[in-house]
Length: 82
Image (cartoon, rainbow, N blue to C red; front, side, top):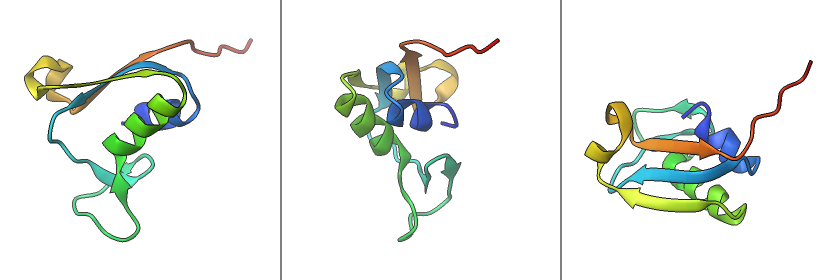
């Protein structure tokens, strides 16, 4: 999630795969155990920003994602600076 949420916000996600029915509460990149007024569902955050930045969002079963993760991303590009 440390990569997915910021990358989605910055428009760098080409394809986002999200686990059906999962919730991951936190603050941008800090997962939290429970929802609170200061937290949001980071999976929703990543999905919304991927869609707003013209990326594709797919909902799938958790067993279809790598290593039991609730999310997987394919990035458009990565910036490398010399």
